[in-house]
Image 1 (cartoon, rainbow, N blue to C red):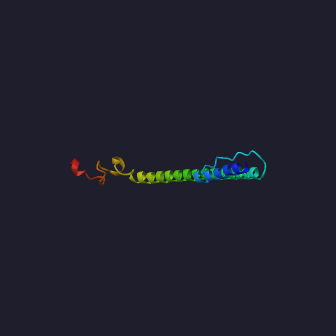
Image 2 (cartoon, rainbow, N blue to C red; image 1 turned 90 degrees about the vertical axis):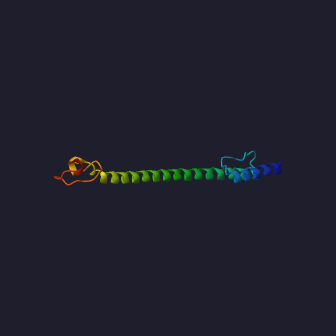
Image 3 (cartoon, rainbow, N blue to C red; image 1 turned 45 degrees about the vertical axis):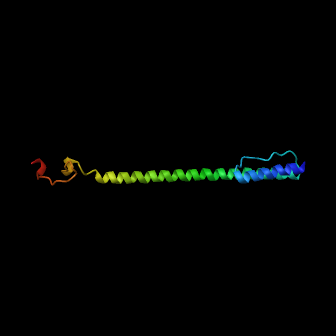
Length: 113
């Protein structure tokens, strides 16, 4: 009976180490040495699973912060780009032409003469 329980315990540890599925637990049926070992192993898995989830959640937050930063940087770059080009093509203020060239005020545009 002990050898059968030990084989199940060993098989479960092997399965978890290969699959990295930390949600599995050893069923505890007795409070002898093997039962206490299984309980300790289950508690280890609980802590491991909790810590891995915390690491995953933190990584998600860091990723979201990076994305938000990239969006903000992209937005400020677009604002700078668009702000620099606002003066061109506004005929009333700068005497611009349809092709974006600036003509000095007071001189007629040769294309329209």
